[in-house]
Image (tube, rainbow, N blue to C red; front, side, top):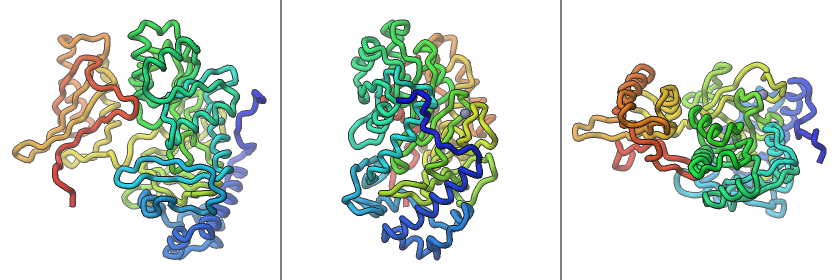
Length: 436
Ligand code: ZN
């Protein structure tokens, strides 16, 4: 393995990148049109043919693809190649009903490992590293994604899998893992456990590559400090778009570089589906440029982010987006105010003395009046008696920023459940019957 191989494309200018993107878009549209009756129908309905794609701006003439299209085409939705070309299936749970199954050709699998290896390189992982992969294996994209790319960069993979805290601690201690790959919640759980067992000085985790859920600033700080100053890298991805590894935080930690040579990113207003102003928040919509088995055309991810204009100080020409702020579908409306859990998260993080774990409970009282109760932990160093005034501080701050007043309940550090997967933050029991 050439230690200088960074798996980056050889483009030097934006123009070269755009020429590559246009070629990829034209190939993808023709491939989808010719390969999938479902795509062809969608294009026919939209009145567009592959010949109409002459510039990157013509992307906007193409119809959207959604999770419903994946559900409708179950079990092999939007398949554009014969079965003989498919070498692997991955699957993720849908929010309702059927699983989302995705097919991969050998080239898809190779491309994915290639740009995922780029993520490891951007995080500074080399063949000297020992990478503890504490994410799900099986039909999920996580385990095999982290694993294949780890081997590609020549690092030592420790496929610990999810859960099993004893094994994780033992690996970190005995095998001296230098990189930990996990969800943010799992990272916090393991960092706390290492600290509780008095192992902080005996383990050697320098980097934590975490993904698949949002994380607060205070959560990041906590994980880092409990692991003796480990550097954190937020990695992005979704099963529909290969899996994890479609972008990563750079060593300058100024948000996420995404792999614009493999997919186009649009940021749209989720209501109007029109582009937002440069730098504004909106829904991430992706179009693949090289994906064979199941290309995505204007796929609505429901992830909320924004493009960061301008060059990054790290020197990479790959464009950047912000960390995922939330989902269009986990936003909740309370007293007519649109609220993202990540916003509450940010407010809690800004108050010294409060911890990183919290829950938002939305209920309705006998008078049908909605209530929002925020249960938040105090930080580890604090005691409950001293912290009581913080409840009012948090409530006031939320009132100021979000125009709603929640009840706040403080609980001791460690009393909310830690999850090995995604922690549930919002408990909404306001609507008990079916929604029409
Ligand atoms: Zn950068």
